[in-house]
Length: 61
Length: 175
Image: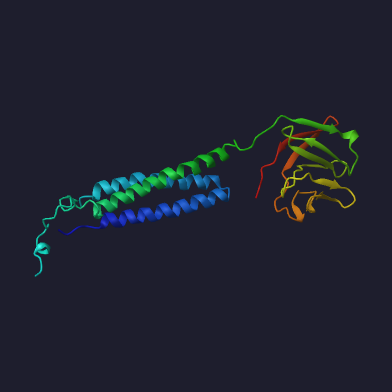
């Protein structure tokens, strides 16, 4: 059976974004830009439900 | 003569391993991989929380701790260029107040940032000296200028009120 790897690709992109946002968050924290730290923290948290939805939609694809 | 054992799958040997049904449980298929990625996203989200919490705390100004103001000395008792020892904020946090000019006072916690020896104000040289290992500090900023210490002395904010000098708060340590 031919499988679609769209979900794998999307989730890999999300993992990449997670890594980038975490890096940014930590650096902004040590640069004492606390608003930016909060923004990246929020983005990181939002990515989890997004990843969950993508998994739900594409696990049978 | 070769045995015919190897040609039977599973061969009939009583070692209690051939009959375990593994059911592909160790293989990572596409869906399992996606599930792992979602789990990784969850771990990232959870591990972001403390950073956000500490950043929010800093934004709300909870990091700035204010101690009750403490009288150090009367202005009339401290000549220009002299120093006086006091303790702030606790009774065991030794500190030094130096009067640089008529209206300019500086105060530092005077435990040397090398090995916590008391740092003295040497009026003749115009700098602060740690006698233990000859560490020198700039009196204006508390920054180390020579010797083993590499970090500045924690500065104490002071204010002059009604002819007396009060210690207000310890400045945040900045690396």
